[in-house]
Image (cartoon, helix red, strand yellow):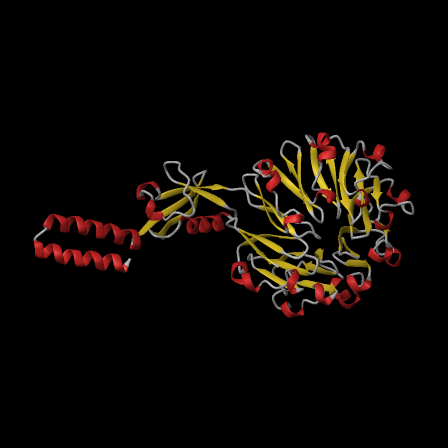
Length: 476
């Protein structure tokens, strides 16, 4: 701009010498316009659709971009928003304030924009984000669901949620239909059950290599690799109606029916065989979760029933008395389970090296625990004080000593990838630890994670944070 001003001043000198007074007036007008666009402050107020003040009389530099104003308004609203002028036109985020008629943008209306939701599979290498308009954007390993170009048109709108396997995604639309993409052998190709997925689907769950969809009628439809739970021939009649929810391990599924009984199928070595606990699963089951090779069910009485490979938490006999009642939450690593009881105490079992043994921090887990999350081999518990306690494999998040002070208070939630944790604090800041390659090192995006983060998402080795403005920050 300095070059432009100097050029104009030289032109003034020439005009004065030549006596070109009318041209001088025109030049001065042009200079004033330039200076106004670069230096003028403009008062802008932002109101909600209901007329409530969100930002009152902000002094905005004329050369500032609209997205800076959107960011301030979004933070004040606590949710992403779009801005509209008095004439009803949406302000494009990339444009400058000076480009609009001052009288049309002195009062802007902020309209709530549905926040971005991100989906990633714990052992997958891609993300799928559902935008506010219901469209899906993917990134990550192309062969693992990161490339959705073959179904792009079907993902352009009206997507409700997305589930994943190790190498594919399945999206449920508002119409109840399903769109799948990714590796064809492990769920990316649903053509064999296309007719069954055109309507009525309410939720989809994925094992490592197969999907199970629950329809409004309560029946289950599966596709993908037969050895990973896609083959339901042995329990088809039990899955024809009444199913409310489905959980998974690497190679098996467990369905909770309306009568609170459980039906399992898939690889018997991964929880697909419940014959030893079938009577206990005949009624009263409220929830089921899985590790890589075992299941654990919480019953209405607060007791826990587990089955599957003992190396993955399938045998809880060592803590049977502690799991007899009062359990309210369950969480898992790849190899162990952790139960949170009504009093806020924690009970863990499974492989002792990977979260099954919490004896080193037992005193800190006696009360006040509100949430427990896992990586592949470690747990992290959030207490009512906002402090975090971790245990398990020290390399995969079990040792949080390097960020101990940052985790001493104000933490609201914790999320894990396969080998790292990310903690969200009350002010919207993020703290990470664990394996650097698995998301434990966030130094490259540290400045973007200082505040205003609203939600965290993860896959096998990466995190994605959604900020108040709706923008997404990734690392790992």
